[in-house]
Length: 149
Image (tube, rainbow, N blue to C red; front, top):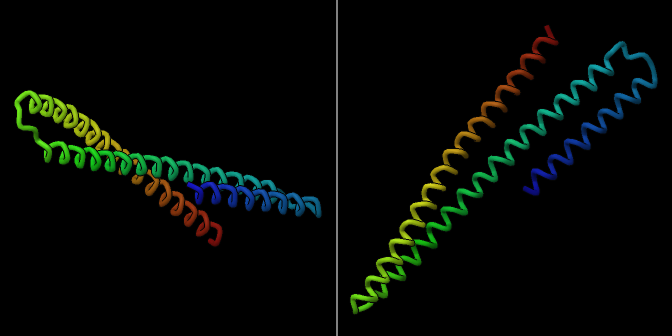
């Protein structure tokens, strides 16, 4: 997450530098509308970067939640193994242990379902980020090729 925040600051700084450069060029002389075009393009590109960064941030949060939940499942399974390894001899204690086991079993199932939902959500978000990124790349290629025709 620190990398993403750094990246946002860097791209924002770079766009601001480019905007200042465009302003300075405009002060030096008539740009025939090129300054406005450059400024609009920079603002648009900056917004696209921020959108992609937010999508990536959301994907990372989902993946982090997924791994936190898988870690919970692992801990719960270890606890269940510990409980099972210390089986009591009397029936009353065994009944209590069975109830505890059923409660833990239900917790594991709930956590597993949350992991499954997080995995599906992460997969969908990754597909969206992938699709959005490549459609923007293709659009940029198309625009550049049209300029040189």
